[in-house]
Each structure stands twice: as structure tokens, then as C-alpha cells.
Amino acid sequence: MSTPDAEQLALDGLAPRKRRKRAPAERTVASERPIARVVLDVQATHLGQTFDYLIDERQSESVRPGVLVRVRFGGRRVNGVVWERADHSDTPSSSLRYLERVLGPQVVVPASMREDITRIADAYGGTRANILRLAVPPRVARVEQEQQMVAPFTRRGAAAEALRRMPDEYRRVLASSYDGLQGLDDALHGGRFRAFAVDPLPGVGEWCRLAGWMALTAMSAGKAVVIVLPTMREVNDLSRELTGLGLRMFERTGAANGGYDGDVAVLNASLAPAERYRAYLAVASGTVRCVIGTRAAMYAPVEGPALFMILEDIDYQYADGMMPYAHARGVLRLRARSHDGVFVAMAQARSPISQWECGANHVAQTPVSGFSTSIRPLPSVIKERMPWVRWLNREELGRLGDTTLGARVPHTAVTILSKALESGPVLLSVPHDGIDETLSCAACHRRARCPRCTGPLAGLRQGTPRCLWCGAAAVQWRCPGCGGERMRAVRVGAAGTAQELRGLFRHVPIVVSSPSQPRGIVED
Image (cartoon, rainbow, N blue to C red; front, side, top):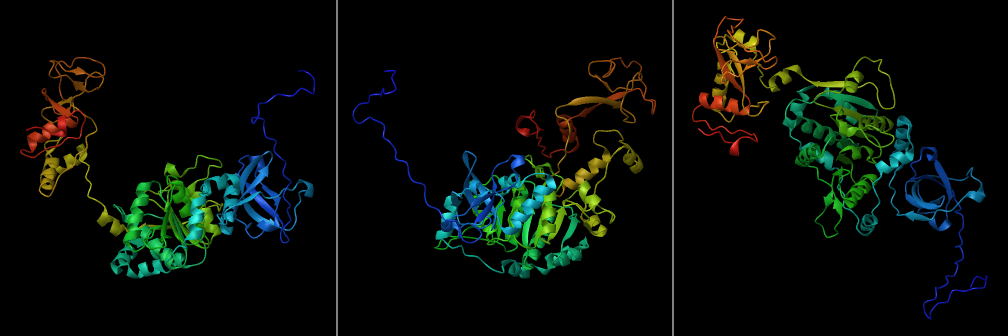
């Protein structure tokens, strides 16, 4: 059995089938621009270039710049994006291979998006493949088949119609509340790059109103809109605002054709693959002109001049943790410049880079930063909108002549709370839970401290008070302020404060949000 002619025996019907070798398919090089330059889904930095492949004549019509293809690279098959077509290649003809397959007829990376990806990769020191894996969601063939079978119904002029229906009071309040808002309005209707740092009015929903006005104004002027928000909470808030202004979210219609329709699409990494790919294709094809979402929306494939806005650009959610670690603020500003659009950084607390960009005109111009125009609310409007704040510290209570200076709840606070209880409930925030007793002078309410190390005193119920720092007994203690010799216990903490409030406000129900309070209710 060791001879070369030995043969492994097999039972009848169980012998391995011999496969016939298929002859290679005959292929013809495309007559026009037969070279496809492809950016492969290979993350190695030294392979961050385009690779040339031959185009078969039968695939020539479907191989367009921006479509997904599958090719052989080394010993495996990889996906890629056709970046461009060319007439000639510097690669030797003996080394050129044909494209194996065209993955769908859809152009998933339009021309302007390919230019933006190149600029972003150069600005952050990465490759185009690094950006493509983050910008283009995974392909879902079923979504492409749906779009081929059902033509989506689209509305034209929805933004202009919604802007006309916007109440005059809405626009008048915005125009009379901000300094320099007319410059932003002119930029949204203009055709050159402008950058702004906007501080919205204080209050819940004020940034939503301003962002909704900017989105409608830009869309009515023929511009696309990309708004990047830190979390889905802000995305939902802005969605409700845009819906209230007359725009429709991109979703399935109730028509018989079963297509999708809408003015605003949401792009978010947490969406289902089919929903995210469907929204991405709708934006890439120009069906939807307004995109909102979290960090993933900064790569929305919009064409032409556009408004690129980011909210709270200092938030950590905007920093990408994958190579080349691009930041959403820099990406949006770079894209706004390349599209001759408008960049807006809006924040309740302006970030250091926004403040630096609003400085003198000597700000250095880089691909991701440069001079920005500042837009702030008018001081008179801020004064009216800001809540009344009073810090009841010792100096303020002394200025008011409050005789209960040093008490846990001074008389001034009791008066304010009594007036507030006439119109509604009152919320008090206490930093500690439970009851922590500290001692103060019974005459002037000054905090009792150790004469030896100035540490706080405690333990009046146990007899002689002792210092919480050095442990020394406070024998024959005297107040350094008034000379009083008696001390009183001051309860500190949520439960202690609740007990004091119960004595001050009779027959007023008190609810404590604390894990140590049974059922959260303080019994009378």
C-alpha cells in the first residue's frame, strides 16, 4: 500500500465526485475609460491609495464613480468604492485584474462627498478608507430592491411653504432677541462660506426654535441642512420642533405604492441597518435635503451649498475614537468651506475654540478652524429671561439685617419659601443624605469651631463636644464673635433639613427623594 499506484478504496456511490474545471469567462475591456480606480476597504495606512482594475464591457454602464464593487486584492475578496474612471493606468497590464462584481446600481458616495472625504483624510492624517468605513453604512440589498420596485414620492418646496406659514411673531421675536441675526440670514441666502458662533437665549427649547428657523431658511433658499447633536434626546427635541413648523420626518407613506417620503431624515449609528441605509440613500440621491442626528450625521452625503450646524461642540460625544480620530466640529466646518455653505456652532456655554475663533482677525485659517462671527442675545433680553438668583450667604444676610444669621434655614429664606408655596410646590436640593449634626453659637449662630485647630465641633448630645479633626474636648468654649457660651445643634442633610422645614411650615406635605426615607414622605 506504500507504492505510488496505491488507491484508496471506496464503497459504491460514496466515491468523491470529480469537479470539472470551468473555463475562465471571456471578458472584453470596456471601450471607454476602461480603468476603475478603487478605494478598497483596507485600513492599513500604507495601502491608503487607489488601486486600478479593468472594467468589463458588460459592466461599463453600471460602473459609475461612487458605486460599491467587489474585487480581488491579494488572496481575498474585498469591497471598495469606485473613485473615478480613467483611460490609462500606470500599473503594468499583466498585473491588472477585472472587477468581480458591482454591488448595486446606487451611487452611495456622490462626487462632492468623495472630495470631502479626501479633504477630511488629509486634514486629520488618515486615509480615505478610514473615513469611508465610518461615513457609509453597511449595505442592505433589500433596501435597494425596494427602491427599484417603488418610486418614492417627494414633495417640492415644503420648506418654503413651511417658512411662509411660520408665524410672524416667531420670526419677530428671534430678530429682536439677537444681535447680528440679520447677518446669519444673509449668509443663509448667500452663496459664499461664512462661519458663526451662536449663543442661544437661556431657557428650555430656545436653541430648538433658533435651529428650526435656520433649517427652514436654508432649505427655502435651496440649501441642504446637516445638524449634528450630542445625544438622541436633542435629536427628538429638534424633530418635534421641525414637525411643528410644517416639515415631515422621512418615513413610510400611507399611499398604495408603499414608498418613503419626508423632508427630514435621522442618521444615527443606533438605527437598524435597513433604516440607516435607507435614510443614507435618500440623502445621497437628493430625495431628503435635511439631516439631523448624532455624530454619524456629520458624514451625511449632501450636495451643493449647505448649512452645517453643531450643538454644544465641546461635548465629548463628538470625538471619534477610531482612526483618524476626526472631530465633528472640524469635519462640519471643513465641509461647509468646501461646499461654500454656512457653518454654525451653537452652544449654551461657548467652547474655547469658538471663543478663540471669534477673536481678532489674526486667527489662523486651517482646514478645520478659522474666523467666526459672533451672534449673542441682546443684554436687555437676557436680563428679562434670566431667573432671579440670590445667594443667601453670611454677607448677604448681614446686608439684609437678618437676625437669624447662621441658621440652617434663615428668616429671609423662610419668607421666600412662604410666598412661593402660595403659587405652587418648591424644590430644595440638599447635598447630603440623612442627619449630620454640627454645632453653632446659640446667640449669633456662628459655627462652633475648636479653639485648638479650628476644626468643626460635634457631639453635643453625648456630653462634652469634641473636635472632629483633632478630637480635643471643647471645655469652657466661648464664641469668638459674641462671647456666648451656649451652643446649639444644627441638623445638616436631607432628613435633618426636612425635619426643620416640618417645624417651620405646619400642615405642608414634604416629600424627600432619598433612599433612607421610607416611601419618601415625612410624617407629621
